[in-house]
Image (cartoon, rainbow, N blue to C red; front, side):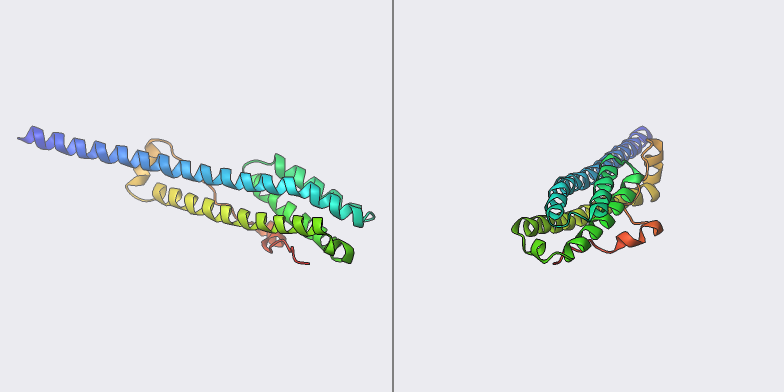
Length: 184
């Protein structure tokens, strides 16, 4: 009789450990998937930027510094990984703000259908990036909470699950906390 009770307790503990492990795998995979969603939206933004720059260049030939800044920021953001990705993306957002400020000075550009279409696409993409960041942060929060809570922290540390960083703006990114202005 005692043997069955001990075996039952062992089976329950084993089932709990397996369920906990699988839960951590699911949470980690969701967070990674959410990061991939951010990358998809960022690629979309990267693809729109050259078209936008070329459209604005046609109207504002003497504003080369703004174009160079956007191009450099785009290249840096595309090549950044890990924690540097957040800073690079924030620099790109700032460069885009300056490009839109240049466009403000050209009424013909603001009325150009190509520019208006690109502006609308970029605005939509920025909204999707924000949604993807929120989704990522939600998944990371869930994973980190599970890793820090007892008894999940026992299983998490046993199988070397690691907490992930939230996608957030640092103090050095204060200018990037304002949304990219895409109104004309």
